[in-house]
Image (cartoon, rainbow, N blue to C red):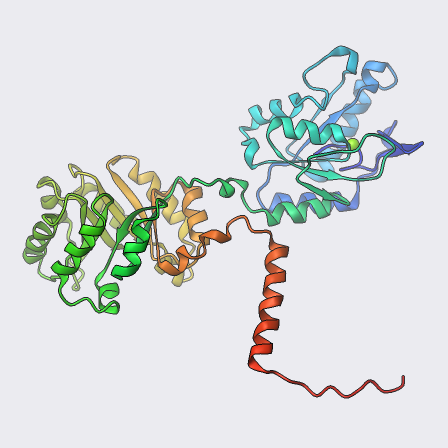
Length: 417
Ligand SMILES: [Mg+2]
């Protein structure tokens, strides 16, 4: 954030803005107080960047500028405030519109500029933000000088800017490429055929509950039909025995159906007996597995031990089922990602997602894979949509549905006041 006119009130003379000359003139803007509190609560680092050429011109002392900066930093709880003491003739790298102040702060705080916003009240602030690679917001006070152009948003003050920033979510989510790979979850052959043509889908998972819903009764025939359509991407088929020896035999048989087959092995049988011994045995026989129905980190740990010498394999944590119990799955999934670093051939699957936001959460923690149902896949196009546009569509939907339902109210005509 620029300082004068954004964080504290600027002094306007002949329509042009100037910094306060003395500490007594420094007035922190009340909207800036509220905005900084909101942004801080949302986890943003808050940094001030200000041109103070009066130092170079000899009309202000560095001590006074530093005193004011300290006051602004303290009252708004900023993480840092950095100033440029030069004038145009110094040809420095820090005087805005040069991006030097922003780049120096980015280095010292390890800031990702693509996930950052620059707010200023002059064209030089916006230009510096643009050169640094930030999203830019212009606060237009109507100064008699060259205006800003090309900014991403215009706001009347920092509080309105903060509302808009919060509504953008993490700008990294607008990148077309997720680092989390999307697997499609389902057992409907027609839907799987359609999804097989989608390059966004990196793999497929099925389970007995989905197969029952889809009316599958000949398992091997269904699997072979699926593999004929999807010969190139990982696809998981689950074993269904409850006896450990028979589970292993089923797993060996299913693994022979195709080289892209991952055998889903539940982490226990129905009596809660750990399947770790057969996971270890199957791993030593080169069977690619997808260990499923996991909800705890100690299950992850024992499974990773059993997968010590495994070929490429997956572990499926049921994040949505964790969420169903009122527990936030994100810290648990982040811990699982850390644990998997010791097994580079094993990837973590965020299973049982409840909403499309789970893709954002999985991506943020570096979870390797998420399984999405066709219903959630249908919401992928919503990413990056402006919220006021979505609000308008919502109002239009209510209106259409009220019309279609034939809703009527007999409103009496307004009487005299
Ligand atoms: Mg300013």
